[in-house]
Length: 166
Length: 418
Ligand code: SF4
Image (cartoon, rainbow over all chains, first blue to last red; front, top):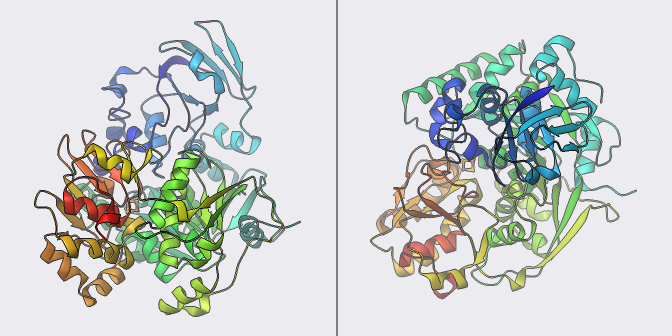
Protein backbone atom coordinates (compact mmCIF):
# COMPACT_ATOMS: atom_id res chain seq x y z
CA UNK A 1 0.00 0.00 0.00
CA UNK A 2 1.26 3.45 -0.96
CA UNK A 3 0.78 6.30 1.49
CA UNK A 4 1.94 9.90 1.30
CA UNK A 5 1.22 13.60 1.08
CA UNK A 6 -0.03 15.15 -2.15
CA UNK A 7 2.01 17.62 -4.23
CA UNK A 8 -0.29 19.32 -6.68
CA UNK A 9 0.94 20.12 -10.20
CA UNK A 10 -0.94 21.35 -13.26
CA UNK A 11 -1.57 20.02 -16.77
CA UNK A 12 1.11 19.19 -19.34
CA UNK A 13 4.08 18.71 -17.04
CA UNK A 14 6.79 17.88 -19.60
CA UNK A 15 10.00 15.91 -19.30
CA UNK A 16 11.76 19.27 -19.63
CA UNK A 17 10.02 20.33 -16.42
CA UNK A 18 10.83 17.06 -14.69
CA UNK A 19 14.47 16.80 -15.76
CA UNK A 20 15.56 20.13 -17.30
CA UNK A 21 17.70 19.72 -20.41
CA UNK A 22 20.33 22.11 -19.06
CA UNK A 23 21.34 19.35 -16.60
CA UNK A 24 22.03 17.01 -19.50
CA UNK A 25 25.55 16.50 -18.13
CA UNK A 26 24.12 14.99 -14.93
CA UNK A 27 22.32 12.18 -16.71
CA UNK A 28 24.92 9.71 -15.55
CA UNK A 29 24.57 10.90 -11.98
CA UNK A 30 20.88 10.42 -11.32
CA UNK A 31 21.14 11.24 -7.60
CA UNK A 32 22.45 14.70 -8.52
CA UNK A 33 19.95 15.12 -11.36
CA UNK A 34 17.17 14.25 -8.90
CA UNK A 35 18.10 17.32 -6.84
CA UNK A 36 16.77 19.41 -9.75
CA UNK A 37 13.51 17.50 -10.10
CA UNK A 38 10.69 19.79 -11.25
CA UNK A 39 12.60 22.87 -10.05
CA UNK A 40 11.23 25.03 -12.89
CA UNK A 41 7.71 24.30 -11.59
CA UNK A 42 8.23 24.45 -7.81
CA UNK A 43 11.47 25.97 -6.62
CA UNK A 44 13.46 23.55 -4.47
CA UNK A 45 10.93 20.77 -5.07
CA UNK A 46 13.34 17.91 -4.40
CA UNK A 47 14.34 19.50 -1.09
CA UNK A 48 10.77 20.16 -0.01
CA UNK A 49 9.29 16.69 -0.47
CA UNK A 50 9.31 13.84 2.00
CA UNK A 51 9.90 10.22 1.17
CA UNK A 52 6.68 8.56 0.11
CA UNK A 53 4.97 11.74 -1.09
CA UNK A 54 2.67 11.51 -4.09
CA UNK A 55 2.59 13.77 -7.15
CA UNK A 56 -0.95 14.69 -8.20
CA UNK A 57 -1.17 16.30 -11.64
CA UNK A 58 -3.56 17.18 -14.44
CA UNK A 59 -3.59 15.83 -17.96
CA UNK A 60 -0.75 14.56 -20.13
CA UNK A 61 1.88 14.21 -17.41
CA UNK A 62 5.35 13.45 -18.78
CA UNK A 63 4.89 14.67 -22.34
CA UNK A 64 7.97 15.36 -24.38
CA UNK A 65 11.19 13.47 -24.65
CA UNK A 66 11.90 9.80 -24.19
CA UNK A 67 14.38 10.45 -21.38
CA UNK A 68 13.79 7.64 -18.92
CA UNK A 69 15.81 9.71 -16.48
CA UNK A 70 12.60 11.66 -15.86
CA UNK A 71 10.75 8.67 -14.43
CA UNK A 72 13.83 7.47 -12.58
CA UNK A 73 14.57 10.71 -10.76
CA UNK A 74 10.98 11.00 -9.59
CA UNK A 75 11.47 7.66 -7.92
CA UNK A 76 14.97 8.46 -6.66
CA UNK A 77 13.76 11.73 -5.13
CA UNK A 78 11.40 9.66 -2.99
CA UNK A 79 8.03 10.06 -4.72
CA UNK A 80 6.06 6.84 -4.26
CA UNK A 81 3.44 7.28 -6.96
CA UNK A 82 2.21 9.74 -9.60
CA UNK A 83 -1.52 10.30 -9.95
CA UNK A 84 -2.63 12.21 -13.05
CA UNK A 85 -5.65 12.64 -15.28
CA UNK A 86 -3.59 11.14 -18.09
CA UNK A 87 0.00 10.31 -18.97
CA UNK A 88 2.10 10.70 -22.08
CA UNK A 89 2.79 7.33 -23.64
CA UNK A 90 6.59 7.07 -23.45
CA UNK A 91 6.61 8.34 -19.89
CA UNK A 92 3.99 5.78 -18.88
CA UNK A 93 6.04 2.97 -20.31
CA UNK A 94 9.27 4.22 -18.75
CA UNK A 95 7.68 4.58 -15.33
CA UNK A 96 6.45 0.99 -15.35
CA UNK A 97 9.85 -0.16 -16.57
CA UNK A 98 11.65 1.53 -13.69
CA UNK A 99 9.07 0.49 -11.11
CA UNK A 100 7.37 3.85 -10.53
CA UNK A 101 3.64 3.28 -9.95
CA UNK A 102 1.23 5.47 -11.94
CA UNK A 103 -2.45 6.00 -11.41
CA UNK A 104 -4.78 7.45 -14.03
CA UNK A 105 -7.55 9.25 -12.17
CA UNK A 106 -10.05 11.77 -13.55
CA UNK A 107 -10.82 13.41 -10.22
CA UNK A 108 -7.40 14.85 -9.39
CA UNK A 109 -8.94 18.35 -9.07
CA UNK A 110 -10.64 17.20 -5.87
CA UNK A 111 -7.31 16.49 -4.23
CA UNK A 112 -5.62 19.43 -2.50
CA UNK A 113 -2.00 20.27 -1.87
CA UNK A 114 -0.87 18.44 1.27
CA UNK A 115 -3.76 15.96 1.46
CA UNK A 116 -2.82 12.60 2.92
CA UNK A 117 -3.42 9.87 0.32
CA UNK A 118 -3.49 6.11 0.28
CA UNK A 119 -3.25 4.17 -3.01
CA UNK A 120 -4.13 0.53 -3.56
CA UNK A 121 -2.80 -0.39 -7.00
CA UNK A 122 -4.20 -3.89 -7.25
CA UNK A 123 -7.71 -2.99 -6.29
CA UNK A 124 -7.66 0.37 -8.04
CA UNK A 125 -8.54 2.63 -5.13
CA UNK A 126 -7.26 6.04 -4.06
CA UNK A 127 -8.31 7.15 -0.56
CA UNK A 128 -8.01 10.78 0.47
CA UNK A 129 -7.51 10.46 4.23
CA UNK A 130 -7.77 14.23 4.68
CA UNK A 131 -11.14 14.71 3.00
CA UNK A 132 -12.41 11.19 3.59
CA UNK A 133 -13.21 10.70 -0.10
CA UNK A 134 -12.50 7.54 -2.00
CA UNK A 135 -11.92 7.16 -5.74
CA UNK A 136 -11.79 4.15 -8.03
CA UNK A 137 -9.57 3.88 -11.09
CA UNK A 138 -9.16 1.19 -13.73
CA UNK A 139 -6.45 -1.03 -12.29
CA UNK A 140 -3.19 -1.26 -14.23
CA UNK A 141 -3.27 -4.16 -16.77
CA UNK A 142 -1.96 -7.41 -15.32
CA UNK A 143 1.01 -7.52 -17.71
CA UNK A 144 2.27 -4.20 -16.37
CA UNK A 145 1.40 -4.91 -12.77
CA UNK A 146 3.62 -7.99 -12.91
CA UNK A 147 6.51 -5.76 -14.00
CA UNK A 148 5.76 -3.20 -11.26
CA UNK A 149 5.62 -5.89 -8.62
CA UNK A 150 9.20 -6.89 -9.41
CA UNK A 151 10.22 -3.23 -9.20
CA UNK A 152 10.70 -2.83 -12.94
CA UNK A 153 11.42 -4.69 -16.15
CA UNK A 154 15.13 -5.22 -15.53
CA UNK A 155 14.48 -7.06 -12.27
CA UNK A 156 11.63 -8.91 -13.90
CA UNK A 157 13.72 -10.17 -16.79
CA UNK A 158 16.61 -11.05 -14.51
CA UNK A 159 14.35 -13.10 -12.31
CA UNK A 160 12.07 -14.72 -14.89
CA UNK A 161 14.25 -14.69 -18.00
CA UNK A 162 11.33 -13.63 -20.16
CA UNK A 163 8.42 -11.18 -20.37
CA UNK A 164 5.21 -11.65 -18.39
CA UNK A 165 2.60 -13.59 -20.34
CA UNK A 166 0.80 -11.35 -22.84
CA UNK B 1 -11.42 -7.29 -42.17
CA UNK B 2 -9.09 -4.59 -43.42
CA UNK B 3 -5.97 -3.51 -41.61
CA UNK B 4 -4.44 -0.18 -40.82
CA UNK B 5 -0.81 0.32 -41.81
CA UNK B 6 0.00 -0.07 -38.12
CA UNK B 7 -1.74 -3.44 -37.88
CA UNK B 8 -0.03 -4.63 -41.06
CA UNK B 9 3.41 -3.80 -39.76
CA UNK B 10 2.80 -5.38 -36.35
CA UNK B 11 1.32 -8.50 -37.97
CA UNK B 12 4.49 -8.90 -40.02
CA UNK B 13 6.66 -8.50 -36.94
CA UNK B 14 4.80 -10.91 -34.68
CA UNK B 15 4.21 -13.64 -37.25
CA UNK B 16 0.45 -13.64 -36.81
CA UNK B 17 -2.52 -11.45 -37.58
CA UNK B 18 -2.86 -8.83 -34.88
CA UNK B 19 -5.41 -6.14 -34.20
CA UNK B 20 -5.29 -2.77 -32.47
CA UNK B 21 -5.45 -3.06 -28.69
CA UNK B 22 -3.48 -6.31 -28.41
CA UNK B 23 -0.26 -6.53 -26.43
CA UNK B 24 2.29 -8.36 -28.61
CA UNK B 25 5.92 -9.39 -28.60
CA UNK B 26 7.34 -8.04 -31.84
CA UNK B 27 10.74 -8.36 -33.49
CA UNK B 28 12.46 -5.08 -34.28
CA UNK B 29 14.43 -4.17 -37.42
CA UNK B 30 16.30 -1.08 -36.30
CA UNK B 31 17.18 0.12 -32.80
CA UNK B 32 19.19 3.10 -31.67
CA UNK B 33 20.07 5.35 -28.78
CA UNK B 34 21.68 8.79 -28.69
CA UNK B 35 24.17 10.42 -26.34
CA UNK B 36 21.45 11.56 -23.93
CA UNK B 37 19.92 8.12 -23.57
CA UNK B 38 22.70 5.80 -24.79
CA UNK B 39 24.84 5.65 -21.63
CA UNK B 40 21.86 4.49 -19.57
CA UNK B 41 20.89 2.07 -22.35
CA UNK B 42 24.39 0.56 -22.22
CA UNK B 43 24.25 0.31 -18.42
CA UNK B 44 20.94 -1.54 -18.55
CA UNK B 45 22.17 -3.77 -21.39
CA UNK B 46 25.05 -4.82 -19.17
CA UNK B 47 22.86 -5.05 -16.08
CA UNK B 48 20.61 -7.48 -17.97
CA UNK B 49 23.64 -9.64 -18.67
CA UNK B 50 23.39 -9.48 -22.47
CA UNK B 51 26.53 -10.53 -24.28
CA UNK B 52 25.65 -9.69 -27.85
CA UNK B 53 23.45 -7.40 -29.87
CA UNK B 54 20.60 -9.32 -31.45
CA UNK B 55 18.70 -6.65 -33.35
CA UNK B 56 19.51 -6.71 -37.11
CA UNK B 57 20.49 -3.04 -37.27
CA UNK B 58 21.69 -1.33 -34.12
CA UNK B 59 23.22 2.14 -33.97
CA UNK B 60 24.46 4.70 -31.52
CA UNK B 61 24.37 8.41 -32.32
CA UNK B 62 26.42 11.15 -30.73
CA UNK B 63 24.25 13.99 -32.00
CA UNK B 64 22.84 15.83 -29.00
CA UNK B 65 25.92 17.35 -27.42
CA UNK B 66 28.44 17.05 -30.16
CA UNK B 67 31.22 17.98 -30.40
CA UNK B 68 31.12 17.59 -26.64
CA UNK B 69 30.87 20.85 -24.70
CA UNK B 70 31.95 19.42 -21.35
CA UNK B 71 33.96 16.79 -19.60
CA UNK B 72 31.13 14.66 -18.13
CA UNK B 73 29.63 14.33 -21.59
CA UNK B 74 32.97 13.54 -23.21
CA UNK B 75 33.32 10.68 -20.77
CA UNK B 76 29.93 9.20 -21.53
CA UNK B 77 30.51 9.60 -25.26
CA UNK B 78 33.76 7.71 -24.88
CA UNK B 79 31.81 4.95 -23.18
CA UNK B 80 29.46 4.80 -26.18
CA UNK B 81 32.36 4.51 -28.62
CA UNK B 82 33.89 1.71 -26.57
CA UNK B 83 30.61 -0.16 -26.35
CA UNK B 84 30.17 0.25 -30.11
CA UNK B 85 33.60 -1.25 -30.84
CA UNK B 86 33.09 -4.08 -28.42
CA UNK B 87 29.65 -5.03 -29.70
CA UNK B 88 30.08 -4.27 -33.37
CA UNK B 89 27.55 -1.46 -33.21
CA UNK B 90 28.16 1.43 -35.62
CA UNK B 91 28.54 4.74 -33.79
CA UNK B 92 27.61 7.85 -35.75
CA UNK B 93 29.84 10.46 -34.21
CA UNK B 94 30.06 14.24 -34.18
CA UNK B 95 29.34 15.81 -37.51
CA UNK B 96 27.46 12.80 -38.88
CA UNK B 97 24.09 14.33 -38.07
CA UNK B 98 20.87 13.78 -36.21
CA UNK B 99 19.84 10.16 -35.70
CA UNK B 100 16.42 10.44 -37.34
CA UNK B 101 17.78 12.07 -40.47
CA UNK B 102 20.65 9.60 -40.84
CA UNK B 103 18.31 6.65 -40.31
CA UNK B 104 15.94 8.00 -42.96
CA UNK B 105 18.73 8.57 -45.46
CA UNK B 106 20.49 5.27 -44.98
CA UNK B 107 18.52 2.54 -43.27
CA UNK B 108 14.76 2.84 -42.83
CA UNK B 109 12.66 0.75 -45.23
CA UNK B 110 8.89 0.83 -45.68
CA UNK B 111 7.33 -1.66 -43.27
CA UNK B 112 10.20 -1.64 -40.78
CA UNK B 113 9.68 -1.58 -37.04
CA UNK B 114 12.09 1.04 -35.72
CA UNK B 115 12.66 1.87 -32.06
CA UNK B 116 14.89 4.55 -30.65
CA UNK B 117 15.66 5.97 -27.25
CA UNK B 118 14.54 9.32 -28.59
CA UNK B 119 10.97 10.49 -28.84
CA UNK B 120 11.27 11.67 -32.45
CA UNK B 121 11.97 8.18 -33.73
CA UNK B 122 8.48 8.55 -35.20
CA UNK B 123 10.22 10.47 -38.03
CA UNK B 124 10.75 7.07 -39.71
CA UNK B 125 7.02 7.07 -40.41
CA UNK B 126 7.74 9.38 -43.33
CA UNK B 127 9.07 6.34 -45.19
CA UNK B 128 6.18 4.06 -44.24
CA UNK B 129 7.91 2.47 -41.24
CA UNK B 130 6.51 2.18 -37.73
CA UNK B 131 9.02 4.25 -35.78
CA UNK B 132 8.50 4.89 -32.10
CA UNK B 133 10.40 6.37 -29.19
CA UNK B 134 11.09 4.43 -26.02
CA UNK B 135 13.20 4.76 -22.92
CA UNK B 136 16.76 3.54 -22.49
CA UNK B 137 15.79 0.31 -20.73
CA UNK B 138 13.31 -0.62 -23.45
CA UNK B 139 15.93 -0.05 -26.12
CA UNK B 140 18.49 -2.06 -24.11
CA UNK B 141 16.01 -4.95 -24.15
CA UNK B 142 15.64 -4.61 -27.92
CA UNK B 143 19.44 -4.50 -28.35
CA UNK B 144 19.76 -7.70 -26.31
CA UNK B 145 16.70 -9.69 -27.38
CA UNK B 146 15.87 -8.25 -30.80
CA UNK B 147 12.29 -7.76 -29.63
CA UNK B 148 10.09 -6.12 -27.02
CA UNK B 149 6.46 -5.87 -26.05
CA UNK B 150 4.16 -3.38 -27.73
CA UNK B 151 0.54 -2.49 -27.50
CA UNK B 152 -0.68 -2.31 -31.08
CA UNK B 153 -2.14 1.19 -31.17
CA UNK B 154 -5.45 2.21 -32.64
CA UNK B 155 -4.98 4.61 -35.50
CA UNK B 156 -6.35 8.03 -36.35
CA UNK B 157 -6.76 8.68 -40.07
CA UNK B 158 -5.51 12.14 -40.95
CA UNK B 159 -6.69 13.04 -44.43
CA UNK B 160 -4.81 15.93 -45.99
CA UNK B 161 -6.55 17.14 -49.11
CA UNK B 162 -5.68 19.85 -51.60
CA UNK B 163 -2.58 21.78 -52.56
CA UNK B 164 -0.50 23.89 -50.20
CA UNK B 165 -0.73 27.62 -51.00
CA UNK B 166 2.41 29.59 -51.70
CA UNK B 167 4.35 30.26 -48.50
CA UNK B 168 2.69 27.41 -46.61
CA UNK B 169 4.68 24.25 -45.95
CA UNK B 170 4.65 20.81 -44.32
CA UNK B 171 5.51 22.41 -40.97
CA UNK B 172 2.32 24.46 -41.11
CA UNK B 173 0.34 21.29 -41.79
CA UNK B 174 1.63 19.52 -38.69
CA UNK B 175 1.19 22.67 -36.58
CA UNK B 176 -2.43 22.77 -37.77
CA UNK B 177 -2.79 19.12 -36.72
CA UNK B 178 -1.33 20.03 -33.31
CA UNK B 179 -3.82 22.88 -33.04
CA UNK B 180 -6.71 20.53 -33.80
CA UNK B 181 -5.66 17.52 -31.72
CA UNK B 182 -3.85 19.27 -28.87
CA UNK B 183 -0.73 17.94 -27.18
CA UNK B 184 -2.50 14.80 -25.97
CA UNK B 185 -5.10 14.30 -28.72
CA UNK B 186 -3.46 11.14 -30.03
CA UNK B 187 -2.00 9.63 -26.84
CA UNK B 188 -1.44 5.85 -27.19
CA UNK B 189 -2.51 6.07 -30.86
CA UNK B 190 -0.85 6.13 -34.26
CA UNK B 191 -1.51 8.77 -36.89
CA UNK B 192 -1.90 7.51 -40.43
CA UNK B 193 -1.72 10.18 -43.10
CA UNK B 194 -3.55 9.97 -46.40
CA UNK B 195 -5.06 12.17 -49.08
CA UNK B 196 -4.04 14.04 -52.20
CA UNK B 197 -1.72 16.42 -50.36
CA UNK B 198 0.24 13.48 -48.94
CA UNK B 199 0.40 11.83 -52.36
CA UNK B 200 1.94 14.94 -53.85
CA UNK B 201 4.46 15.43 -51.08
CA UNK B 202 8.10 14.39 -51.28
CA UNK B 203 9.69 12.37 -48.50
CA UNK B 204 11.47 15.39 -47.00
CA UNK B 205 8.11 16.98 -46.24
CA UNK B 206 6.64 13.70 -45.05
CA UNK B 207 9.51 13.38 -42.58
CA UNK B 208 8.70 16.84 -41.20
CA UNK B 209 5.10 15.82 -40.56
CA UNK B 210 5.85 12.36 -39.15
CA UNK B 211 8.56 13.88 -36.94
CA UNK B 212 5.99 15.82 -34.95
CA UNK B 213 3.45 13.02 -34.49
CA UNK B 214 4.75 12.66 -30.93
CA UNK B 215 3.85 16.30 -30.30
CA UNK B 216 0.19 15.28 -30.23
CA UNK B 217 1.05 12.30 -28.05
CA UNK B 218 1.09 9.75 -30.89
CA UNK B 219 3.17 6.62 -30.76
CA UNK B 220 3.91 6.87 -34.49
CA UNK B 221 2.94 8.89 -37.57
CA UNK B 222 2.87 6.82 -40.71
CA UNK B 223 2.81 7.74 -44.37
CA UNK B 224 1.94 5.18 -47.04
CA UNK B 225 4.90 4.26 -49.25
CA UNK B 226 4.54 5.04 -52.93
CA UNK B 227 6.44 6.29 -55.96
CA UNK B 228 7.65 9.33 -53.99
CA UNK B 229 9.18 6.93 -51.48
CA UNK B 230 10.84 5.01 -54.30
CA UNK B 231 12.24 8.24 -55.74
CA UNK B 232 13.71 9.17 -52.36
CA UNK B 233 15.26 5.75 -51.77
CA UNK B 234 16.69 5.81 -55.28
CA UNK B 235 18.28 9.18 -54.61
CA UNK B 236 19.77 7.70 -51.44
CA UNK B 237 21.23 4.85 -53.51
CA UNK B 238 19.01 2.14 -52.10
CA UNK B 239 16.05 1.72 -54.40
CA UNK B 240 16.06 -2.01 -53.61
CA UNK B 241 14.73 -1.15 -50.13
CA UNK B 242 11.49 0.06 -51.66
CA UNK B 243 8.19 -1.73 -51.42
CA UNK B 244 4.70 -0.39 -51.66
CA UNK B 245 2.76 -0.43 -48.42
CA UNK B 246 -0.66 1.06 -47.84
CA UNK B 247 -3.47 0.55 -45.37
CA UNK B 248 -6.43 -1.51 -46.58
CA UNK B 249 -9.29 0.60 -47.91
CA UNK B 250 -11.63 -0.94 -45.33
CA UNK B 251 -9.26 -0.55 -42.38
CA UNK B 252 -10.91 0.53 -39.16
CA UNK B 253 -9.84 3.85 -37.72
CA UNK B 254 -10.59 5.13 -34.29
CA UNK B 255 -11.15 8.64 -35.58
CA UNK B 256 -10.73 10.64 -38.73
CA UNK B 257 -9.73 14.23 -39.26
CA UNK B 258 -9.83 15.92 -42.63
CA UNK B 259 -7.88 19.05 -43.42
CA UNK B 260 -8.17 21.08 -46.59
CA UNK B 261 -4.60 22.29 -46.79
CA UNK B 262 -5.38 24.81 -49.53
CA UNK B 263 -7.01 26.95 -46.82
CA UNK B 264 -3.97 26.97 -44.54
CA UNK B 265 -1.89 30.01 -43.69
CA UNK B 266 1.61 30.23 -42.20
CA UNK B 267 1.34 29.25 -38.52
CA UNK B 268 3.42 29.70 -35.41
CA UNK B 269 3.37 27.90 -32.05
CA UNK B 270 3.64 30.36 -29.19
CA UNK B 271 5.35 29.59 -25.87
CA UNK B 272 5.30 27.24 -24.03
CA UNK B 273 3.30 24.53 -25.80
CA UNK B 274 3.40 23.13 -29.29
CA UNK B 275 -0.38 23.18 -29.58
CA UNK B 276 -0.55 26.91 -28.79
CA UNK B 277 -0.82 27.58 -32.51
CA UNK B 278 -1.82 30.89 -34.08
CA UNK B 279 -1.86 32.39 -37.57
CA UNK B 280 1.26 34.40 -38.30
CA UNK B 281 -0.89 37.02 -40.01
CA UNK B 282 -2.57 37.68 -36.66
CA UNK B 283 0.48 37.35 -34.43
CA UNK B 284 2.51 39.78 -36.54
CA UNK B 285 0.26 42.63 -35.43
CA UNK B 286 1.72 42.26 -31.95
CA UNK B 287 5.23 43.04 -33.26
CA UNK B 288 6.88 40.29 -31.25
CA UNK B 289 10.61 40.95 -31.34
CA UNK B 290 12.87 37.98 -32.06
CA UNK B 291 16.49 37.85 -30.87
CA UNK B 292 17.64 34.60 -32.40
CA UNK B 293 16.51 32.41 -35.28
CA UNK B 294 17.45 28.75 -35.57
CA UNK B 295 16.97 26.86 -38.81
CA UNK B 296 17.74 23.18 -38.42
CA UNK B 297 16.84 20.04 -36.40
CA UNK B 298 15.27 16.71 -37.30
CA UNK B 299 12.07 18.59 -38.11
CA UNK B 300 13.35 21.15 -40.61
CA UNK B 301 17.08 20.79 -41.14
CA UNK B 302 16.97 19.30 -44.61
CA UNK B 303 18.24 20.76 -47.88
CA UNK B 304 14.78 21.81 -48.92
CA UNK B 305 14.32 23.73 -45.66
CA UNK B 306 17.56 25.62 -46.16
CA UNK B 307 16.46 26.49 -49.69
CA UNK B 308 13.07 27.75 -48.50
CA UNK B 309 14.74 29.99 -45.92
CA UNK B 310 17.30 31.31 -48.39
CA UNK B 311 14.67 32.23 -50.91
CA UNK B 312 13.49 34.87 -48.46
CA UNK B 313 16.81 35.78 -46.89
CA UNK B 314 18.75 36.34 -50.08
CA UNK B 315 16.13 38.77 -51.29
CA UNK B 316 15.96 40.90 -48.14
CA UNK B 317 19.08 40.22 -46.07
CA UNK B 318 19.29 39.55 -42.37
CA UNK B 319 18.29 42.09 -39.73
CA UNK B 320 21.46 43.20 -37.89
CA UNK B 321 19.94 42.55 -34.44
CA UNK B 322 18.94 38.96 -35.14
CA UNK B 323 21.39 36.13 -34.50
CA UNK B 324 20.87 33.48 -37.16
CA UNK B 325 22.00 29.89 -36.55
CA UNK B 326 21.82 27.28 -39.29
CA UNK B 327 22.26 23.59 -38.57
CA UNK B 328 22.16 21.05 -41.42
CA UNK B 329 20.48 17.86 -40.18
CA UNK B 330 23.13 15.49 -41.48
CA UNK B 331 26.56 15.28 -43.06
CA UNK B 332 24.84 14.54 -46.35
CA UNK B 333 22.64 17.63 -46.10
CA UNK B 334 25.70 19.70 -45.19
CA UNK B 335 27.71 18.39 -48.13
CA UNK B 336 24.85 19.01 -50.56
CA UNK B 337 24.29 22.49 -49.19
CA UNK B 338 27.99 23.21 -49.63
CA UNK B 339 27.96 21.92 -53.15
CA UNK B 340 24.97 24.06 -54.05
CA UNK B 341 26.57 27.12 -52.52
CA UNK B 342 23.87 27.48 -49.88
CA UNK B 343 26.28 27.48 -46.97
CA UNK B 344 28.32 30.24 -48.55
CA UNK B 345 25.19 32.32 -48.96
CA UNK B 346 24.20 31.79 -45.34
CA UNK B 347 27.68 32.70 -44.16
CA UNK B 348 27.68 35.88 -46.23
CA UNK B 349 24.27 36.76 -44.88
CA UNK B 350 25.72 36.71 -41.38
CA UNK B 351 24.58 33.30 -40.18
CA UNK B 352 26.56 31.01 -37.93
CA UNK B 353 26.72 27.46 -39.30
CA UNK B 354 26.87 24.73 -36.69
CA UNK B 355 27.94 21.13 -37.29
CA UNK B 356 25.23 18.61 -38.23
CA UNK B 357 23.50 17.58 -35.03
CA UNK B 358 20.85 18.81 -32.62
CA UNK B 359 22.55 22.11 -31.84
CA UNK B 360 20.59 24.54 -29.66
CA UNK B 361 17.38 22.45 -29.91
CA UNK B 362 18.16 20.56 -26.75
CA UNK B 363 19.47 23.43 -24.65
CA UNK B 364 22.98 22.29 -23.83
CA UNK B 365 25.15 24.31 -26.15
CA UNK B 366 25.49 26.30 -29.36
CA UNK B 367 22.98 29.05 -28.80
CA UNK B 368 21.41 29.21 -25.36
CA UNK B 369 19.37 32.41 -25.20
CA UNK B 370 19.67 35.09 -22.51
CA UNK B 371 16.96 35.78 -19.92
CA UNK B 372 13.96 37.44 -21.48
CA UNK B 373 15.05 36.69 -25.05
CA UNK B 374 12.92 35.11 -27.75
CA UNK B 375 13.94 32.49 -30.25
CA UNK B 376 12.10 31.53 -33.40
CA UNK B 377 13.09 27.99 -34.27
CA UNK B 378 12.15 25.43 -36.89
CA UNK B 379 12.34 22.70 -34.23
CA UNK B 380 9.44 20.71 -32.83
CA UNK B 381 9.22 21.72 -29.15
CA UNK B 382 8.93 24.96 -27.26
CA UNK B 383 8.52 23.78 -23.67
CA UNK B 384 9.76 26.13 -21.01
CA UNK B 385 13.49 25.65 -20.61
CA UNK B 386 13.77 23.47 -23.68
CA UNK B 387 16.57 25.51 -25.21
CA UNK B 388 18.46 25.84 -21.97
CA UNK B 389 16.88 28.88 -20.37
CA UNK B 390 13.48 28.80 -18.66
CA UNK B 391 13.53 32.62 -18.65
CA UNK B 392 13.35 32.72 -22.44
CA UNK B 393 10.60 32.10 -24.97
CA UNK B 394 10.53 29.75 -27.94
CA UNK B 395 8.34 30.20 -31.02
CA UNK B 396 8.04 27.43 -33.60
CA UNK B 397 7.52 27.87 -37.30
CA UNK B 398 8.43 26.76 -40.80
CA UNK B 399 11.78 27.69 -42.34
CA UNK B 400 9.93 30.49 -44.16
CA UNK B 401 8.50 31.91 -40.93
CA UNK B 402 11.95 31.62 -39.38
CA UNK B 403 13.60 33.38 -42.32
CA UNK B 404 10.98 36.15 -42.29
CA UNK B 405 11.73 36.82 -38.62
CA UNK B 406 15.43 36.91 -39.40
CA UNK B 407 14.74 39.55 -42.06
CA UNK B 408 12.53 41.91 -40.07
CA UNK B 409 13.48 41.14 -36.46
CA UNK B 410 9.95 40.29 -35.42
CA UNK B 411 7.38 37.60 -36.21
CA UNK B 412 6.36 38.29 -39.77
CA UNK B 413 4.13 36.71 -42.40
CA UNK B 414 6.61 35.22 -44.90
CA UNK B 415 4.17 35.50 -47.79
CA UNK B 416 4.92 39.18 -48.18
CA UNK B 417 8.63 38.49 -48.51
CA UNK B 418 8.56 35.65 -51.04
S1 SF4 C 1 17.11 17.91 -33.28
FE1 SF4 C 1 16.04 18.36 -31.39
S2 SF4 C 1 14.18 17.16 -31.48
FE2 SF4 C 1 15.55 16.36 -33.06
S3 SF4 C 1 16.62 14.65 -32.09
FE3 SF4 C 1 17.86 16.47 -31.79
S4 SF4 C 1 17.23 17.31 -29.81
FE4 SF4 C 1 15.67 15.88 -30.46
